[in-house]
Each structure stands twice: as structure tokens, then as C-alpha cells.
Length: 121
View 1 (tube, rainbow, N blue to C red):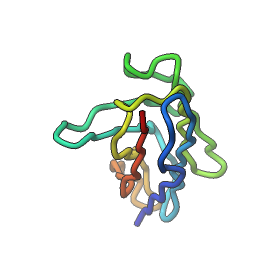
View 2 (view 1 turned 45 degrees about the vertical axis):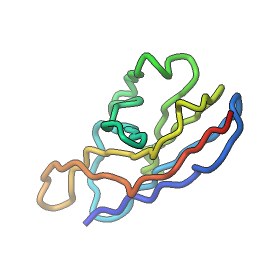
View 3 (view 1 turned 180 degrees about the vertical axis):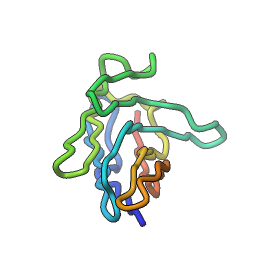
């Protein structure tokens, strides 16, 4: 099995910064794509940013220039550095990893438990 542990969320004032982390552990041979997804109350989940195993990144237009996604494969950890936060960034943030398991070599997407980010105006 694979476990994902998210950390780094919290309450911040508009204009502030936060750094989210998502640490993976367990029966992992390799991690392919990694994504951050968020869900605000009453809204559907939306992709915030993604990064491939070759370090190609993509960002939603609403975070372009403010958020930076990165990964440390040695630590099996995904990061999201968030700057210039706005009240509309308030949401539960989830990491989503495409994991290939040891032994079976099967590929499966895993989700973190979600972490709250609240930006006050």
C-alpha cells in the first residue's frame, strides 16, 4: 500500500505565502506524474498544478506566476510553494500521485487526505 501525508496548510492573510508538502511512503517503485488539486466549498475539484517525472510543469491560469510546483524524488515528496495568496485561493488542497508499485509494477493514482488553506482578506 501507499500512504500520502500532506502538510503545510493553514490560515494566512491575503498577500502571504504558504508551502504545501505531500510525502509518499509505502510500496513504491516509481512515481510518474504528480498534481495538486483543490476544492473550494460548493465547487468542483480543479487542477492547480502538475509536474511530470521529467520535471515538465503545468499550471492553472489562476495561479500562474504565483505558485510553483516541485518534487524531490529521493524523498518521494511533492511541494507547492504559494505566494501572493488571495481569498479566492481558499480551499482544501489535495495531492494526487501516479504511483507504480514494487513487485506488481501496477500503476495507480493515490490521493492525499486534503489540507485546508484559508486566506483572509
